Image (cartoon, rainbow, N blue to C red; front, side, top):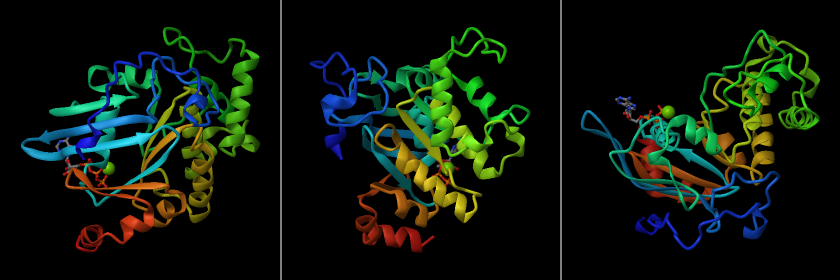
Length: 282
Ligand SMILES: Nc1ncnc2c1ncn2[C@@H]1O[C@H](COP(=O)(O)OP(=O)(O)OP(=O)(O)O)[C@@H](O)[C@H]1O
Ligand SMILES: [Mg+2]
């Protein structure tokens, strides 16, 4: 996939104010500086990561378009989480490049800088403030001046309040707004944490095994949520639950031994001989 090697375009130095110029519909304004004039929002080009000589990522190349809902599948140890670690700055690649939009070199930014630029990540274990209500959790997560810990006693302006109410609707937790987060079901905690990520006004959401441990009903509702978020946000979802992937996937990337084995619609990758071999052979 050498055609992935075009992250930089010096001719486009400013970002559009919204996705409308690119034909992509956004529910919110893009972070200034993220140039998606070529549609691609994430570019990984020939990324390699070794752990004690073992190549967890082996010249991995991948482009994700703005507003896409990309599912990444692959057997245990394929490198899926490591890929997210590279995108979020947790792991530095040995070689290769990683760009956010056309101009932001992710390999030069720290983890908090990358989060601040608009790439939000959700780990598998929900980390909500159990002793606070659902509403307060969203309030605490809002993008405030990072030098001052946002306090619950400070006045919430109406914009922040409206945003919280909108997100409560999106994550289907409006009826639970005043419940303590510790009393929510596992699935509800996961949605709350997604809501908390949304409060940070990200453009890209990276979700690692988001429906693991959920009931069938919660899994179905998560599918609805992700389909709602796609378009307004770019989602990269790593999942082992194939029924879930089949339900939400637009494009699927299959990772194996640190590189892309196949990519395309769910139907196309399911019919790929190599993919069948890798999944049945494990
Ligand atoms: N910090 C680390 N030190 C050493 N080896 C690591 C480290 N992180 C990952 N690995 C190894 O790199 C390979 C890829 O791991 P990774 O966690 O990315 O796989 P994965 O596709 O997310 O798997 P799973 O589906 O089980 O979550 C594995 O063999 C793993 O043991
Ligand atoms: Mg993993």
